[in-house]
Image 1 (cartoon, helix red, strand yellow):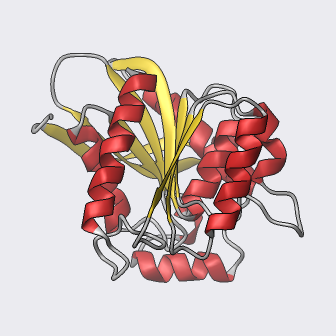
Image 2: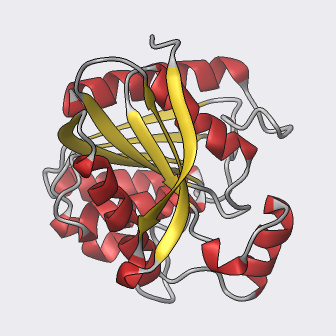
Length: 239
């Protein structure tokens, strides 16, 4: 564990080279650190997401969370998130450009070890899955209860799964409705049939957002076990 951290808001170049803000944290010390891009959930770039970046840094990763809602201005994250959702949110292409820019920022840092993973909660889990399929230089992905990976009525991340070229870990609550256990089963079935490097973990007594200490959905025992599995997975695949 790294108790001395450097945490700050930074500017980086996201989709189409547009400068945007992100939250960045890394251990304060000598050494080479693997990177993690954390994609915030649909409610927005709020406190639990910022805390996740610091938590990753505490365990030896240089982590960054790009503000996907930067175009909606400053203010209360809940208000900004609501406004973004009302206007349809961000496109997959913008998200991919913002994530690619954040990955490039991490790799450009002097203490980077060159490897970068992507992690996300909820909608960020879906976007993480898509990033692992669409971006060619992702070293590992962490999908935390990402919904709408499989949908019937429009193109979705699973359509690109043949191009997934990095290990994936997925964590899901068995009481979740989006994704529900049947959707998780189907995703796992497809990953297995294609010979992808994956591990899925399911938790009884947990629903959606069971990591989020700010919501009634928080389940500390399941969350602590999930974090243990995530750290082991990232250490194995990123160094």
